[in-house]
Amino acid sequence: MSLRLRRADWLEIGLAQLKVEGEAGLTLDGLCGVAGKTRGSFYHHFRDLDAFADALIGYWVERDTAAPLRALEALPDAARSEAATATALRVDGPLDLAVRLFARNRPKLQRQVAAADAARLRFMAQDWRRRLGVSAATARAVAELEYASFLGSHLAFPERSVQERGAMADLFEALLRRKTL
Image (cartoon, rainbow, N blue to C red; front, side):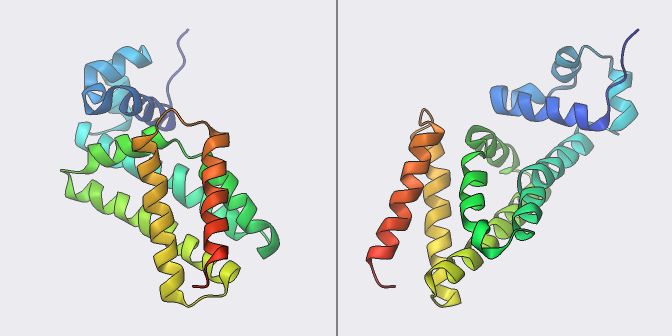
């Protein structure tokens, strides 16, 4: 007896394929092969591969940005910054990069990624403003610098461990606190 895959199962398979194989891993035959399911199972949930791609990026936005931000925003201020750092360190950098590469020539998907980036930056800027007591513009600039460094570190140093990335985050904050903004 074979179990029917849920829509979310297909999307998880898609994210795993995207992370490991890039866009080439998102063919119908490739997805069905990894899932061990027929095309009919795929088409039960998605009209076509374009609809799948749209749902895939939407799922990534919800799973890796919207849901974590909602959880962080529900925390008291005193716990939020530390939890935010821990959450950021759990971000799957290779997947984040793969999503960006996949979306780069697809305007609708680019807009979804841009919305995720905007939500992340908005949260980070609010957190830096509260933590450093700086203007909104300065907090936004700090957030953008930190975010660019974070994303770039996954590209430049993919082998870094969570502990090493945590040390980088600690150094970033220590440097900020040494300099009056």
